[in-house]
Length: 503
Image 1 (spheres, rainbow, N blue to C red):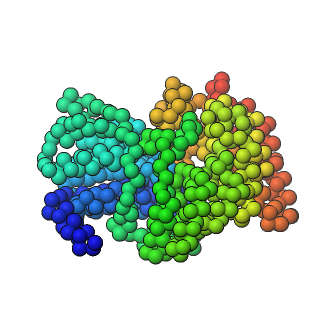
Image 2: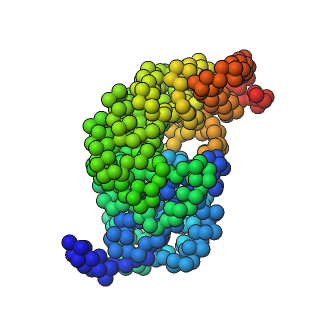
Image 3: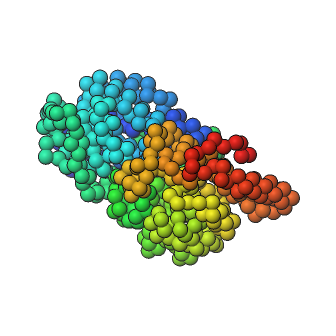
């Protein structure tokens, strides 16, 4: 079998050998909040694409922007590698790449221009590129893949392999799921193709500097975490959630395959922790049970963190997660107001959240809640309902943001007429309202801080620091009282006013 495999690779090498540089444009240093947080993960989807192209017989290198200083490192690698083709394939498992952070789009455009000046053919894929291909085409990209684009990418590379000088019009002729400059200077877009089968190849871990990640994690947190994905997509239909890559489909890998990949990571890199980048991990108790059995049989278990929905967490699911090695679960709670959850088409009940939290706590699994502020129709009473939810659920941690109108979502369609001059956040800590919510941005930033401090104070009480807890609780109540008393000053209706300091 080994000889036949070697012969196959040799045949491919004779048949096909483009030099391809695969990269992405998410520079952690360009996002101050994430740089200070210091929890970087390798670009999983980018590495999957690199592995697939290499398996097809091409000479592949990777530029990993995540820990790079700036685009000058990319330009230097471009000069060293002199690739015939540059593929900028954003990491679709990274939720930050699902929104258009202006700093990252600007970096991508500089990278595209550098690649074109070097004489390389340039193909771009990612959530923002699918939403706004014209921005990337204007920067010099020849082709933008709409959606995931794996099958289309394979066809494009095969055509370039046959003729590296093929004109753009012939390169994309007859292909679906692409946007490219036509002779008239306009771009033609075709609907994204259905999802391709999950990549069979392991991500090309050997093409990035994993030790650079280990050093940063250990220096900042004292442990090292890597990422893995057991599925793609999400079948639920929250009307604000990004769907440009995977739509509403949910493709789950066999539990044994995921266990084998975790075992590979443990034996090769020995991380202390794994982050499952799935939008929804596990989904069914039987899948989690099968995964648990497989990873324990191979002695490949690593403590891990997942994301899921409150209505998918039962006592049986919590037990299965615990048996598999899960240490922390993040739930998209969004709001403590049923009115807001229904407006979002979330499909969950407020009561699901503390119930899920209780099931996880019973198994000693930490729980984090994602909270979203500023959705259409949210009033002070809804925000206070979310405050009460946090008091009931007692999460170990929370993540708070304001509603972000992503192109291609129903939410975006509802607010696009209200979009202000600022249409993109610069970085993930921006928290700027881009449509006319009930309040100005500083109001939501203050609520965010109050929510975080409330969780910290509640956790103080759980650690039995009674004196500190009472003092901090009284201070928190005074801050809430000031906010509630002055709430009308921060309303957008009738003209947004510049708020005084609220602290």
